Image (cartoon, protein in one colour):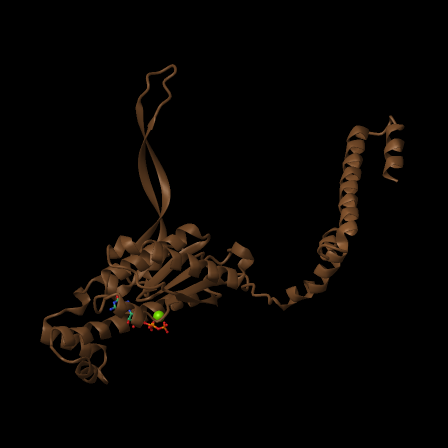
Length: 331
Ligand code: GTP
Ligand code: MG
């Protein structure tokens, strides 16, 4: 049949692209001949050699595939609702134990905080559409812009990419922060996705995390001061703090240990907020010296970099000064 068609094409000079068509048909014919030959060969050896081989060259493979195709329908649609901020929050798995085993200083370990921030920076730099991230203790939240269409807004894809990029960075940069102290086992981070439909909701979410940072850090600061400087046992310190409110804790620190909590490093009190900022960078370029003399030229260009802040994000001031982070929605 192919031979007939090729002959037919050759005898029709008026046909456009005739030569191309003839070549294509000849190629298809040659390919089919090859397949046929292999099939013949397989059939002749079928009885004494392997049985499944011929199925690669028959339609049964296609039929078999379609037989299994239905399993695709078990996948559920996890597309994030449009027009919402997508927040991915990661949290260290069993970091109570991890921090003990790696001798984190109490209540805060500078190396650990630095490594968490470095890993979060890597997430922002490597993944698209993250406008702001906030971290404290063993957690970090990443906010994707409302209009993001990254990975078709599929929650599982977004979350797993954030978690894996963060975890691998945590291991990759470990030495940069902990030097020769070895990483004893691979750390893990769980992740969750939460959607926030308005600027107000998103700001309240971030405020909630920062308030959590404040409560935990105030407690930990007093607790470990009572233990380290007040020489109380951990059980005694726990007892002492039972039923106290923030003002009581501030008072213990101030009157008994001469510590003004508000003067403690902001990085511990406020956590870390990462945002994109424009940064002017001056580089030296060499001019091409074919007609003019070769010489260095200073060029200034603007680059976006991830900048860390340790300030209050509960009040409006932070947002007013950086109105470009969130698109105005009147809420
Ligand atoms: P899961 O998250 O449920 O797996 O438990 P977890 O043990 O990670 O507890 P959680 O996330 O609630 O709290 C984090 C823990 O990490 C804290 O309770 C501390 O024990 C520890 N941690 C985080 N940052 C530091 C730090 O800078 N210094 C010290 N010493 N410990 C820290
Ligand atoms: Mg944890």
